[in-house]
Amino acid sequence: MILKSRKRIELLSVAGAMILALVLGLSACQGEPAAKLETVTVGMESTAVNSLIYIAVEQNYFAANGLEVVIKEYPSGLAAVNGMLNNEVDTATAAEFVVVGKALAGHSLRVLASIDKFRHIYLVGRKDRGINKFSDIKMKKIGVPLKTAAEFYLGRFLELRGMTPFPVALINVPPPQAVDALINGDVDAVVTWQPGVKTIEDRLGNGAVKWPVQSGQSAYCAVLGSEGWIKMNPERIKRFLKALARAEDHLVRYPDEARAIVQRRARYNDRDMATIWTEHQLSLSLDQSLILAMEDQARWMIRNKLTDEKNTPDFLDYIYVDALAAVRPGAVNIIR
Image 1 (cartoon, rainbow, N blue to C red):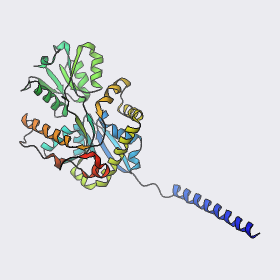
Image 2 (image 1 turned 30 degrees about the vertical axis):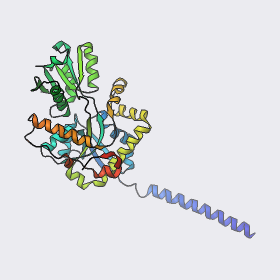
Image 3 (image 1 turned 90 degrees about the vertical axis):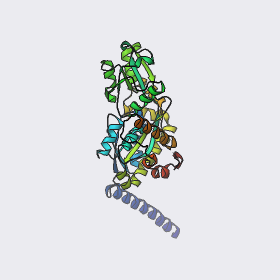
Image 4 (image 1 turned 180 degrees about the vertical axis):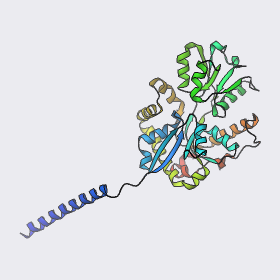
């Protein structure tokens, strides 16, 4: 009898504990709200260079790190950085050449990390404008987004082939207008990238001729922040990069799924994606080669009088190492 009573008491205790847990769980769901996500607005161009950001958004890696990331699209990385400097967004992504230009102009911004190394920039010309081989480019009108990496790579491409001073007319053509500018005959050639290159080839057929203009040199897509914003948000930046680190891991483990996310987010078709995906090395990094590239670009800008500055900046002053070193120390290979 005593044993039966004890067993009954034990069963009632277990049942009571379960009921209590259920009540507490319901009150937690209906009572205190989940911690509010902190917002980070990102200005960026809708291209594959921002793949890690797309993956992190799609897989909720930002939310898992307490962030709500709001993307604002811009027509170019330069426009995105201008938006950041005008306080339209918290952070922006752009090629390292934009960092160089802003540094030479005296702006205080920092690279938080590189999220892509890419080689995708082409010079595409029209054969019916007398461009069949590279030497035919002389005295032609070339559409290029001025003060961007595209202008630098075109300039370097011409220099390496002995075309200095540049025997061409450079016309400022923003990236979204490159295809139409060439098809409509406003220019004889354009500097552009995918999917624009494929679109031009489709519309001109055998009437198009192209050359890769990066001369084997990779460009970097950098995540940037203003000096003031970085000082106020060191922990938020770490969480932002943690989400991107998880996105990189997801890309390595599930490449097909990651590719599908990028294709959908950047609005590429199957044909374009097949080419684009091979042009990018998507990973978090801060490499010494990034510093060397920026120094090279600064010297080129100074030599070609694209700036009033006479001396190359110390680009170590334009790199914010702390966050990435804390999140993924093996990704930092900068000599300080």
